[in-house]
Length: 242
Image (tube, rainbow, N blue to C red; front, side, top):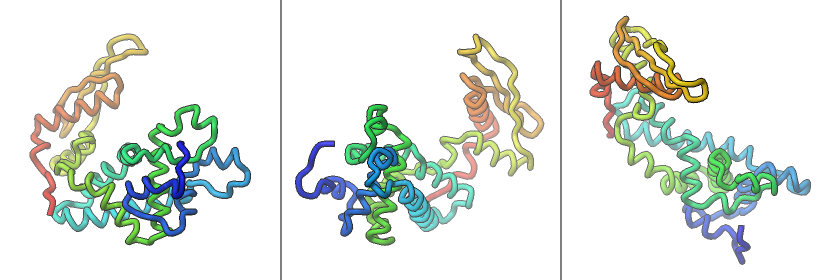
């Protein structure tokens, strides 16, 4: 990280929309455990703040969804939260604000690409939110939430299962036939290191869709999509925002 005169975190604070009164919270949030391991004088890393930040983000997201998606059922709200409160989403936010450049980490971790690792960035973002909460309470955390996470929530397209066709098929199958879908591998082509699986999705005692993929999981998802198209699952239970 380049040396910054004065407040080294000013640009980061501007990016997240919050200025720390006690900078030690932010420094702790940006301290990877590998840095603490290599520097015995450092007493804290960001793991505890990560735990706190995860809970704060979950609460703020749940409150937003509860208020703005009033016609959604609990399962739909949970699916929405899973899409926006994911490691991938947090890592993308962290990348957009160049969070990795501000982190303190061990030499070995940095050489291995730690500043760009998705899990490290996601954890650091959660830790920063936890640090904001410790420094500025719920109101401070809400400012960061509105600036960085709310755009993801506003952009939700109304189809909570777009990234989870198996979950959608499960919901449709339980509602219509009161039973869970089953998946059956019917073919496996190619060598062991490059196999292509063919899977049937069985719903209500009948084969409703067939899918292919490089793994059983991918083939099952493809089969679930085919089944949803056949039985019209995609046209039902679409939540509307309030």
